[in-house]
Image (cartoon, rainbow, N blue to C red; front, side):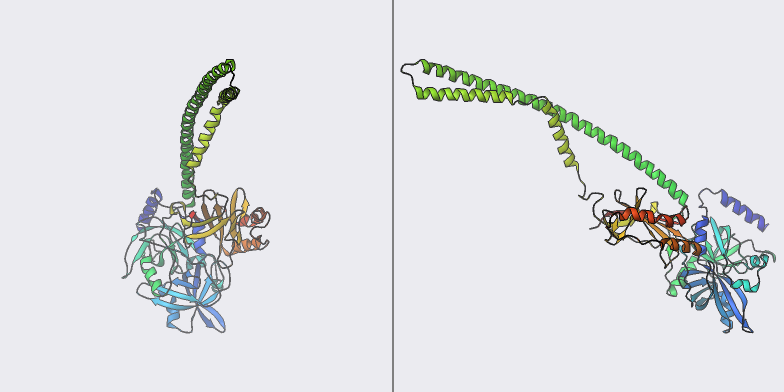
Length: 514
């Protein structure tokens, strides 16, 4: 009956349209920080596994597990705690830092050189339902594979078991999450993950089913885990953002682009209508002005000719007079000739019809200058920027998010020291660090002032390939000839090593910093 109810709950959860579906890439990324915790004894100089459970990294050198996983080691000082990483590498020893029997939590410090990618914890209360995944090392799987005791010390990928949350059920005086993602002996201390690979709780125990395998399971919730970590000087990575798949994000981005294009087309049509109205008004004003100026010039020429005619009559009278006044005749005759030339000049310099087009062009140009409200920086010019994350366009599972400040220069130089490559119409730079197992592809659109980071959380083998490809070239210095195009070609091999889809996308909107 219990089994039947569990299957019904799982079916209902599958039919719920609003529930996020787990992405394998996110679960695999979280599994990189999951370890097998082995209690080790020694007999005849040979290491013997006494018991084992699961743990996961909350810092590079710190692992969380259940308190009961360490019970034997705490009772017997001769026993040691072994940490077996999941992604390859040598096993190391651990040292217990804090034990909380009340809520079955324990914190271990790695004493060797091994460093693990920390898992992010989901913020806020767990959902009432939804898909979850248990990650760990169940003993029954080891037995089914025919693994011997010595195989426990060998690095192996953890088992990932999907299920669904059945509700928040406080138990044994601490807060727990009831779920149906199968766990067995050996899973204790492993993470219970949401669809984005964030920790919801620490798997601890199952509900007995008449002596058979458990159908319902319990995880110590983050309400217990987060205070426990902070009380022991560990500040976990807590992510409270909505869990969305990359496919949902891409679809939302396509819809946003469609809206922007529609708005741009509407804005373009509106601008065109405004320009047409301005041109029509300028055309009318220019035509009226030219006609008025032509009429004024013709009227001026007519008046001047009348004046010249009167002076001419006066000059004729002076010419016929006896005795003739030569001095006055010359003055009046010269004035008459000057006024006739002025009348001719007024007539000849009257504006032609082509002046209408010139006046319309000048009016439109002046209007465009008045409408320019930009900040004076060309998109391809130097920019001092402050960039802020846009949550609705981003998918963050474990990255630490903060505002970014940088200077952008023409040619793709950032902060006068980091050259960006240019390929396929995009400015980008690939970063392959040695300090963490993640590749970041940063890109910047100087026209729209959008900065984007795509993060690929890779297993150790894939990181080794990416580092090898990155080691084949040296990025050109800022400002060198053809630096952007060269770097764009150089980065192609590294990009070819990356999965088709990133695990995280951080989108920032940038504005001029003050």
